[in-house]
Every structure is written in structure tokens, then in C-alpha cells.
Length: 208
Image (cartoon, rainbow, N blue to C red):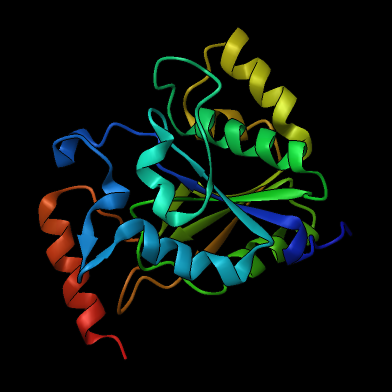
């Protein structure tokens, strides 16, 4: 059986490199949910679960200065999607040393479970190369645990093959889906449209 990664050897990666077209553009992570930026809520949930956190975002990193994070841009030009952001996080973790894995989450998922990383790590310890979150019968490929040693194969897939879809690339490896219940609330609910903010506010108001 493989070794379960220690949580202090897992780096958290918040993915904020997208264009947020359905929200009218801009940074979804800076949108306020019940008075708090989405990014701040994601950080509050992730910080106790990992050894360090890095933010993947493109453009001027100064707009995130208030959060006190390292910010890494996509190493592949042209908004190549979440795989490019995951590669940026893997590169950052490798450059820091001491990290075996990276746990990625989008910046627009303010209801993440507090046992997310621990359960993904257990799945890797049971023999998976990559562990991916799931709920309600659906997988959530951007919410996953990635071994740092896969960064060069990922770079080759992005650059040489034009790979863009996460599940096409992960199909090459042993992937475990780790499921959470989606009732009464889906912990992986994400903010895609303006009305989703109102839904999330209602959920937070009803949560002790």
C-alpha cells in the first residue's frame, strides 16, 4: 500500500486563473459573499488542511496583495485552463521543496468540506495516483490531490499535445473519486452566475 501523504507536506492551490465570463469578467475571488471576498472564505477553509497555500492567477498580482499569498501565473500562454494552473502550483511546490502533493480548489467554491484534503490523502495512501472530489454522482476534476512528481508529464501534455481537459489527462493514471454527500448542501457548490451568490448566502445563513 502507498504511503498516505502528510498534511504538512501538501501545498494548497487556489485556482483563480480563469476569465469568469459568466460573471461578466474580472476576479471571482474578489466578489463578496456575505461581506467577505470569496477568496478569503476559501482560504479560511483550506489553511488548516495544508502546509502552505499558493494562488494561481494571471495578470497583475498586486490586486491580491491583501491576502499575503504567493501568486503564480499560468506557465502556458493563452488561458489554457485549469490544467495550466495546476502545473503552476506543482512548479511552485517543487521550487519550495518539502511538498509531495498539491491540493487544488477553485476560488469560487466557498462551501468546501473541512476534511477535504485528509480524505483525498487517504485515497492516495490506498494506491491512487490522483484523488478527485465528487458529490451527487458527479466528479469535480479541479478539486483534487496531485503528486508533484507528475509535473513534467503534465507540462509535456500541455505543450506537446495541446492537452486542455483535466479528465483526458488524468485518464492516464489511477484516479480515485472520493465522494461527499450533496444533501442538505453540496460542499462543492460553485459561483458561476450572479444569482449563485444569493444561493450561497442563503446556505451560509442557514448553517450553524
